[in-house]
Amino acid sequence: MIPIAGEIAGKTIAEKIFSKRANCDARAGDIVVADVDFAMSQDGTSALAIDAIASMGADKVFDPEKVAMVMDHSCPSPIEGVSAIHAKIRAFGKKTGITVYDWGCGVCHQLVPESGKIVPGDLVVGCDSHTCTYGALNIFSTGVGSTDGAAAMISGKLWFKVPETIHVIYGGELPRGVYSKDLILHLAGLLGVDGATYQALEFSGPVIDALSVDARMTISNMAIELGAKAGLMAADDKTLAFFAERAKRLGTPLVREPEPVFSDEDATYVQTIEIDTASLEPQIAKPHAVGNVCGVSELIGTPIAEGVIGTCTNGRLEDFAIAAGVLAGKTIHPDCRLVVAPASRDIYLDAMAAGYIQTLVEAGACIVTPGCGPCVGTHNGVPSDGENVISTANRNFKGRMGNSNSFIYLASPATVAASMLTAQITDPRDYV
Image 1 (cartoon, rainbow, N blue to C red):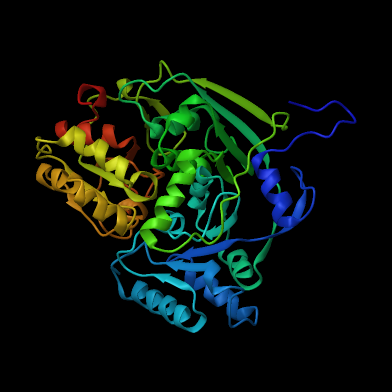
Image 2: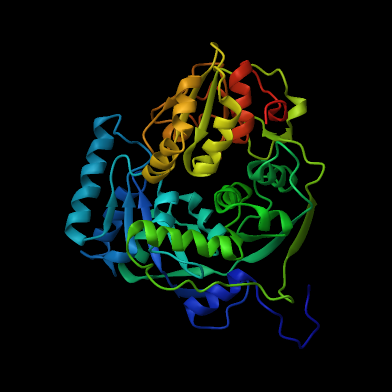
């Protein structure tokens, strides 16, 4: 709502977090210098950040407990140049005492939330665009360049323009065979790839409330695909249980008690979008843009040579449970291959304990090292010329998986798994 002249409007989640971290009355459009609770980079950006830190004359970070570097994009290393970068990260970690996640630990966007070092109400930056994932946990997290990331690592502060917020309300109930991936793909189709540029997305409604934390992270992960700086959700009992369970698994307390942040009833939104999910069918993003979305029924029969389930978008336990449910007792079509990439080592172990990995392998899937897998196109499943790939990853632009002459379709784990049985795009509602 827009406040009447003279009234002081309520605040969005984004405005409240920036107000606290910048110690001021922060409003959309303001430029603030804010305290950062955590800063991160990955192996595609860490070398640049390390060089930038040196160029700024620094030889340490502001707090080693609040900085991490993750090897996830190219692990294990496929070429000597990447091996040199990994060695540089390890050396920097030993020098500064920061946390370094080496080969096999997983994707940065799963590892940082799993670490117990961030909690609801925090402000987090990462030298990777999909840092927005943590918004599902009531954290304002956003991607920055390596130089800005380096500045945050040195000083513990960074400047921001407080974003306006688009409120997205999902009403109704999810139909059978429709998942959180379908929700965010549908929104990408509505807004386009730049429909939320330098704005925050705030997701709410009964459908969001009903989703698991795993499913919510899928939605927030793809906020950047609409141009957004963050994809925020309120904290609830599920959110707090996620952090409590992580602390128990780690055997150590969280870095601090969560400080959940909620938007005010009279918060000002630049736009409000209400979506009734009752009639939504499984969604597909067609090549070569995430916003090029249609219902699965329009593409049934499209030949598929490769499938991908995993990475930072859909590499969590619930995703493997869904895929295993479709593939249990069945065999992948001989004209297809399926690559599965767990988002972290803990998820890999949990999926093995639950029997999901065995089910997927028995169906014919190839399990790769926890990490980004085929998504970035440096190794692990580069498609051939002319091949169609159906993937749960977050991007499908030309060359994304390492071959500009292939074609990438984005879909939910259920749709990918169903398509593996027929070697063509298939409606998952026939299998779930």
